[in-house]
Length: 413
Image (cartoon, rainbow, N blue to C red; front, side):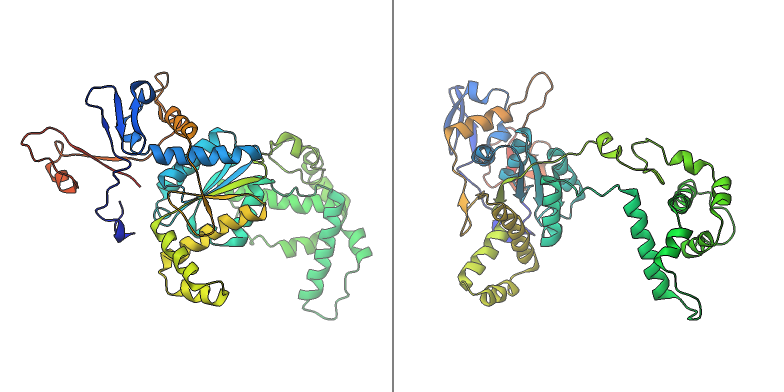
């Protein structure tokens, strides 16, 4: 346990989540769920069974959202055991998952990447700090659930808009007031679609030079001067000097926008992944978030009082509250339910675990012989006193008999 992050958690032990092999060898005795038969726990590491309730909470959340069909599931506190189970089980059920890693682990890039690996595309994992920006978070939810906005591929409209931008640019930055202004008709006559293709092609050439590291000597690349010279040049001579542009205009390469031609073929060649509408949100109740929510509730319904209460909290507590609020509000905006796992929060419903959820969790935690992998994975740190004697200092319960053999203490997040 990261006691530096949450000192109040130092030295605590849950008897409800302890587990041990039954004395008669018939199975495993779990502190919360009683005796689990050998058949139920077959292929499941004993260390994983201490997280059975967390796994069952994740299964309960996914089961609750199943009535809304497949879609996008939002998760806060994705490295906490219950939320991590939700991420994996929801993803396995065909949902896209947007997972928010809470402040306890958001600074750990490896932890964020691991969670991102559990959230299948188009799902992903982000840090708590990103989720605090409500507009950015909302845009990301929309991008995953609905899809990116399709950009118009009407080349004629693109040229019309470009000419309008050139006219505004010329009027704003014209240094010599004695020069005549450029009208729309003059622009249309002097800057055809072919010249537009040539202008874009110069950026393509420049980009290739930069990527190869072979920028030729001479004057720097100056788009305004390039545009000015092209406006004054003869079109036929320009096309004669650049015959490749006409061929490039008809390119069907899926990853390269044609310089002049229509891009109508591109969307059909690129597969667009969409997660589907938001079906619900899960919030893991961390000690930091619980403290922040309790302070806000105690302040009353006045927004000013709530804001003042937040100001007296630590930065981590305020960040947790802001990020979790972003997740909850996105689900509420879609008219979907927000559930809490790993504890309760005022104003939200906690998941209700059933026997079905426990069975689902056990099946997901079982390591298959075929690939030596389980569908549900956790991060577990095991201390063995017989490997390093100093590890015995970590033990909350210590053996009293001499030479008692190896002892294990599971430290979970």
